Length: 455
Image (tube, rainbow, N blue to C red; front, side, top):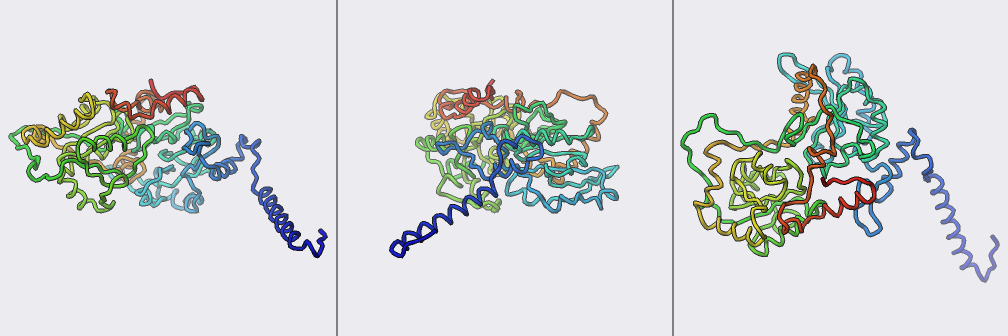
């Protein structure tokens, strides 16, 4: 390019812009992914790369529905040098079961330290090697058991895994999350023919039923006193939350509106009070000062009663105020008459007035603790629920050995009434349903993809 002396400054700018455009074009050529090849089996890595560089947001800035994500999102199965070698050097000598796990993300999963070799005791001890699965390796073909808990929201990855599935390979689905929250951990509707052999969740219909807590009736009923610590509880009601936003319903708004009738001390991300994670004993002492705890679940799905409830009755010795699965699920799964359910009241004002009335009447308050005279509640940790922890894995191995001769049962349907089909709007009362956003999501899914969660 020739530049006149008088236009040197202008020419310099043109040169800089031209060079920048050339670099951009070169970078684009080097990183461009041909979308026309994305359906070919050999391009899973390209799809994953495209997805990781694509924001999963709609034009208005909101999170896109799962079914609208056209390419593979982050699958939580990052490649690892530890898993790529396959550990063949110790498998032949020591391992009875080889397990590949797709674990979910969470602060506690960092403690899994995969791969690891564990021993399950008993009359016939078994050694188990647990590795973190990678869909782009052949490790899944070598595994005796595949465990699914993390998000794999890409149809092609499910199809690839199915193509590698061995005849005697056992697929296990395990999660501590609700069906709505963990919907990316099961095959999408278009490939729902892909099935699991075993489910290990908190749901009562799971093959291995591992709830967040249990009520254990006493074998012998004697005279036992009700201990509610009524006089020691100086606080009225508290809410403990780790996150404010919930997809299925406007939980924060419900708690905020309830606080317009009665004062609620709010701890965690959504409040001004704090009790840091990891200070369990000290936090339990703080929350044990309250007569009531707000135990609103993030999702309203069958059997989904979490530590929000069980911590309240086991650690805080308080009355949980609940919104979550239908009341009949609480009646079947938790200590009898131990909770206050929002559906028992015609309005939020009536609920608040009942809480105040109970807080001022010791006999009425103690009636919510009569269950302690006939049984005890126990809290079950997440480490005991999920199948890829030490306790969960040995329980799974025992189950497989006990059931291996039984005839095949009806495959688990992740979209049936015992999982996603059991999710619905929160509450039966109109005033509770007003906080729901689930129907809007459900209608959008139905309009676009001919699939709905609601029955």
